[in-house]
Image (cartoon, rainbow, N blue to C red; front, side, top):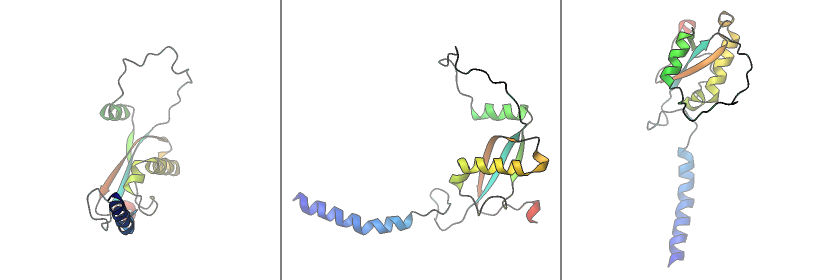
Length: 146
């Protein structure tokens, strides 16, 4: 009695397998939206001045039990207080439309670092404090594309 059920499940998995594989695409989309819809990613970098911190031993005699992590709002307020600026990265700089997942992860950080390194007018701001990915349905038009 169990053998026909197992055989039916295995046959169903073989039939549904290619259909499920076709639905999983690498196209960037928003969660819950149509997979055919194209989205555009705008990368905004919070660039800060380069600072030199003297090397000090870490974790020597420090008790972390009573410390709380810094919230995002506190981190952004500290970055603004130290003179960090927001720099939008042009769409032409991003390689063939970066996916939202890549922008939120290492790809966004690496693109921000490369952009700040290539711009001569931002030489004073080589450090990436944070980056923000704005996902839109339309291409962001800047001064360089007009």
